[in-house]
Length: 591
Image (cartoon, rainbow, N blue to C red):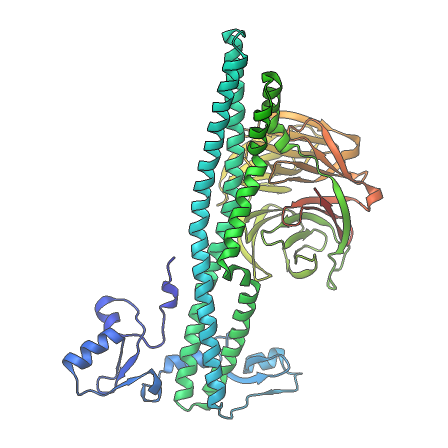
């Protein structure tokens, strides 16, 4: 991982900059030459060329030159960068310039800056805290980088494992065939072989694709961790230099401001380290990888298949199990084992909540789109609202792009939002030439539904093709979803239809049900199970992955459902979350 960002210093080696065009940390200042040098250049300068010149190390920075640039950085207001910091608001624990005071702190009672000299013991304590947190950031960064390497190795190992298991199945199958199919005509034997190989190939693809999706999400999260550690480390190192300079030069105001900035940054870094402390233990990452491996073996069903072959001698029964295995993987029927309700209303909401979309992030946090209040809200693992972002219009749908980024469908545009440290930040926009009712993402492509058609786009907003168009005047496309492997697309239609499409947009199946009148929420789980809501009469159903029939009704009005608008499965908590046209969401624990 590149770490160039933390090679920016207030005092850099002049020789390295001039002769090598690189930034290098200066550790000595030559009084005669009035220049700063790194350790290597200083040895050449003083030991071989100018031994009589007096040099000062960083413990004697009072003899270093006064840096106007450095002083400006210390005094600069982070909000109004053209103003200097002058006071400190104790009511808000915030450094302020004159503009900050006039705009935001006129009613505050304690707006002063204690210019008393910081005690040496206080400064030393700050130095120690800075260094401790810098070491912790380096350790966390190292663990994340090691984790990325381990994840890649893990996927290669799992890929090899799946191939070996399939080879073992094929070998065992060949023995069974030779023993039991001697009297069957060759043509029939070939059909059986073809069925066996196509089914195993399908299972292998499902397994490896889901492994890649799972591990890719973990890798993206770790890469974000590396980048955050590098940024924090750079900022702490710069603050260390600011504090060292201001304290050694007996500048009371500078030292006070630098100390307050250090304390504020240390608090933020310690909070970040606390939230990510689990990653500091590399063994936890190894457990995650091992758990992923076990999940993949269990998901694929290959382990159970091998066990069944040992006891099964009837070739027809065996082939029946084999051909039905792919359906079993997708059509595992959920069973509800409990329910809880959680409010998503905040004090500044002016209307009743209208939860049009839900996304569950890798760390268990939940994003909900509140259509009528025109907001995207972030919920913690306890389903409490911790942050929100006001969008420009009603958000109709939402899908996850990376572990920390979601795409929100708003009128005729797609708005990208990033989640970082429990805060939401706005990103780029994709302008469309049609309305945007629903959105789904898989393998680097966006599937966007308007009221009449389904389109395929790149992540840069380039239209690839129109996959499907409905020409009926009475039917309206409401939501779209895509299978984990990208081979099936699902679109819900008002008043009561669910269409299943092939990858190229070919219509494969249509499911209708009076209990799905005005179908709203639509979601496909990582294992391929299809969930759909009926706005009337207030139901949540699980439909077969083929899109032809209902498997079960998971919730009805008797369970507290009222105009369900969105649904999403959380593998973190093994629960189904339902958004409604009311101020609370429902969470159903399932197996």
